[in-house]
Length: 128
Image 1 (tube, rainbow, N blue to C red):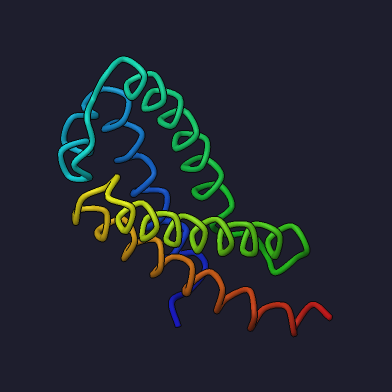
Image 2 (image 1 turned 180 degrees about the vertical axis):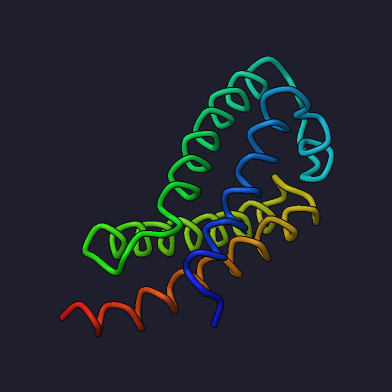
């Protein structure tokens, strides 16, 4: 199982890449997901970029957090968010709104969900 510290570093790098991409160069993501880029999409893209910047900061600065209730909350929140995003990605593909490129995101989200979920499950026994 991957360590919490390493997983948070990986996730912070992914978040920074998404921040930069969504803020300055959203077109490759639009092309990957096969969605149309219009003013509304760019508006949401810029807002999502700011979320990813915040996530990157949280992941990076919590990488050395001890096994506490706070860390458990981060783990559970991320597990649920990533599973939710993966499910939505598959749903949007099935309804024809996103192209096959969405499965790159779905695969990454499932990896993160399973990894963070595994750490959450094994760590919660140590707190109780």
